[in-house]
Length: 206
View 1: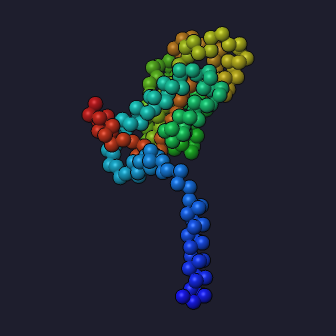
View 2: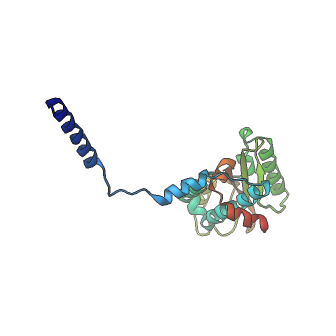
View 3: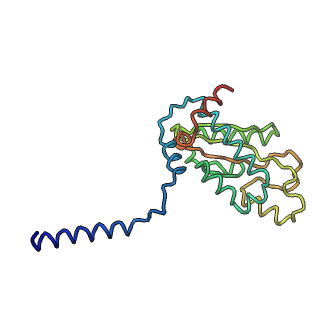
C-alpha cells in the first residue's frame, strides 16, 4: 500500500468517526406526532352533511367552553387562543352590527342582519352555521345571553368588558337578554385535516 492510499484510508476513517460521534442516539422520533401528521395528510372524502355536523359539534364545544367563564375569557383571551390553536379557527365576539364587515361576504352579513333583526324584536336567537360565499370557510355563530356572568362587578368593570367583547350595552339588562354573538370561523381545509373519518361516519349516522 503506498503512502497516498494510506493517507486516503486514514482520512476516511477519521470522517466516519466524526460522523458517529456527532450522532445523538438518545433522541428518538416522536411517533405520536408522526402518526398525527400522517393522519392529517390522509386523503378523506367528506360529504357536505358531515362537514356541517363536524362544524356544529366543534362549534358547540368551543362556545360552551367560552361561556363557562365569560368574564375571564373576554378579559384574558387565554382560552380563546388555546381553542383557536386546537381547532385551527378564528374566534370573534361582538354584537351583530359590530361584527359586520364587507370582507365577510354577503351570506355571513345576511346572517348577522338576521340576528340584529331578532334582537330588535326580542325574538329567539339560535346557533347557526353558514358557508362563506367562496365556500372555503364555515362560520359558526351562537348567541351570548345575559345571565349572572357579571354579578358582583362594578359598573365601570362591566362597561369595560362590554367594550372588550364588542357586546351590546350591558346596562339595565335582564336574564335571558341577547347581548352579542360568538363567531367561530372554520377553514374547510383544516376541518378535513383534523376530522377523524370514523367519527365522521358516526356523526352522519345520528
